[in-house]
Length: 195
Image (tube, rainbow, N blue to C red; front, top):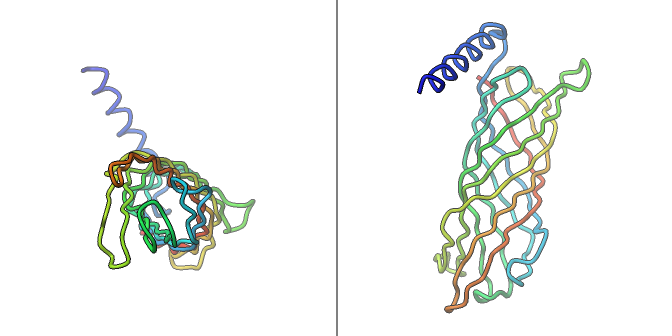
């Protein structure tokens, strides 16, 4: 118990020192990004059409170039024909969290960012009427992302980038169990507000 208390005190001191050393720089940010997605493999034998999605995440910078992020996202793919019927939609929704590393290119204001994180998402299957006909339940997956941060002034930035999500969930359709490997690459463009 004493070790946990000691580690907590060390952590609080490090955060405080970092805060005082960089008081001019904003530590919090909110980002909204959206864009097109392409599946990297078939979903349980089903070919998916080009999809779309968005994420809303909060950033907190804990060190000069390193921060954490957490938020919520949605990504949707339609399928003309599938094991779940014709003209269905597979929609992944849930939570994202992870680490971000951001660093400027030389002395310029242009920065690159790298992200590695986890997902706690589920996949819903919807029919043409928008009714949910199946839900896999939430489970863990992972995410990798990279892009650039273009300063727009007054604590606003534009963040184009690429993202890869991987989520594997088990589901049952017509008493047949299937593993849904929901893997895709997204081209995203985001807007960040620092505060």
